[in-house]
Length: 111
Length: 115
Image (cartoon, rainbow over all chains, first blue to last red; front, side, top):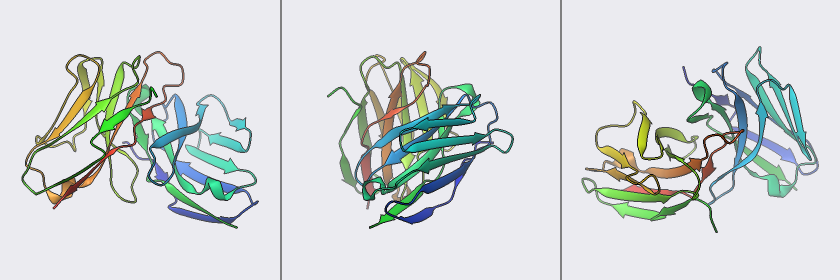
């Protein structure tokens, strides 16, 4: 079935690291994605990882993929107040076409 | 700006009325998607097109919903006989088949409120 699960809320202090977790169901997903949604704005692609990779680093962002457990995480180093947003994990279901999204993790960064 | 644009951004209607939303994708993108998002939830897939062909519809999409993409460019999503449960943000996204990463580019959405 199609199901992507995320924890709903995360609160961190400015300067700390944030880790947002996600589990997915489709083992044939070619890519897995993290999207960011700021208040009043559309979803924007933050980063992605190819399914044959274990880790991808992009500046302050680190994506870890555990295919065996179908677990994806997003680590944001040195979290800033501007990182406050909702973060959505998504899988490309059935090797193409639509993306299936999790319910989103609301990240709150306190000064 | 050549991003995905949606119109109208906000629509308030009375129950039982019909509404139509329009989406203009990024010009070279051949796939177009419609999603629905309610408060506190992630985007829920409704349907998608490749060029003018509608390739998949969600089982959640009732027969009151119809989407078209007649010339393979812009798309419309019509909701007939609206119900209060249709209140949501309707998101349009586009993508390019053959692009390696397959990511979707989203518009800012059309918010529907059914009174």
